[in-house]
Length: 100
Image (cartoon, rainbow, N blue to C red):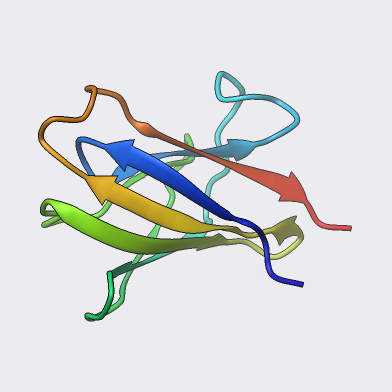
């Protein structure tokens, strides 16, 4: 079963991956794989979250990106991120739920 699609509008292509049950102020999830592809087509980039669960995709330009965040044992986050210089200056918040 695929996860529901979510949507974020951010100033930069990055943020924090965290356990949904802990909330965005909880400890981030390290070593999650983040797959990013310009929408509707383009080359997929891969980055991995760091110790605090944070990531940033280098060279992220304005536009719409398809994003999937995966880690064994967790249900993936899947959605679209719109990057715009007019967005509020905040980082993305990407909750993962423990797998069932």
